[in-house]
Image (cartoon, rainbow, N blue to C red; front, side):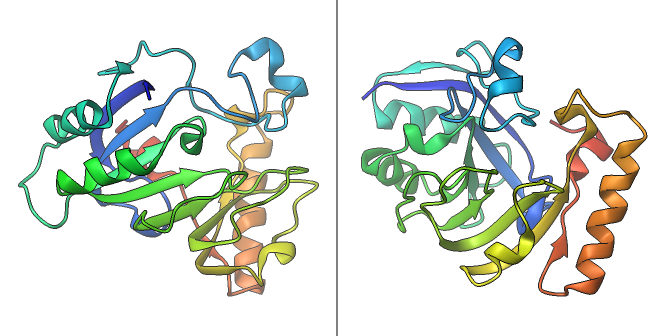
Amino acid sequence: MTYSIKEIFYTLQGEGAQAGSPAVFCRFAGCNLWSGLERDRAKAQCSFCDTDFVKTDGLNGGQFSTAQELAQKCHSIWGGDTSENMLIVLTGGEPMLQVDGPLISALKKQGFRIAIESNGTLVVPREIDWICISPKADVPLVQTSGDELKLVYPQQENSPKQFEKLDFSHFFLQPLDIQQDQQLDNDRQGDHTTAAIDYCLKHPKWKLSLQTHKVTGIP
């Protein structure tokens, strides 16, 4: 299998339960809910994505012909001490369009603990150490268990209550970034954060997730 990778970089995880953790981010090209092209955004099943996952022209991106080749490249990007704390985050786009058993095995042989950020429309192998699912409106949720459920809030068609009984250890609300929805005024950004804070205060099952990488200016 050939793996199409947009970019690979070393940074700190910016959001969710592992925020602040050093990690290699491996961003897979392509998604099953949006082409990634602005002309298609309005009609996409997920219209508020803030990530460029089109083509393979990002930092350290490209086509990797084997799982071993990609795993070795990811290992070469790790910038910290080599230890049991080596974390890789498989993200996208939608990584589960490409992630398979050979890649999981190759990454583990390189010493990585593997986390994935997925929209939940495809089954995620339990061999992955940390499963983070971000459900999207009007899209069937196939992966209903994992470590972390992170819901962009608000979404008109997605109420937090409909996910509360799923088998996840952590439940996060992440305020909708105004840059993710070009149809909204800039004044609405603060409203989204306030609404997410208010919901978490009233429903303690949910925690607030902020995109700290955007605040700090790291990748």
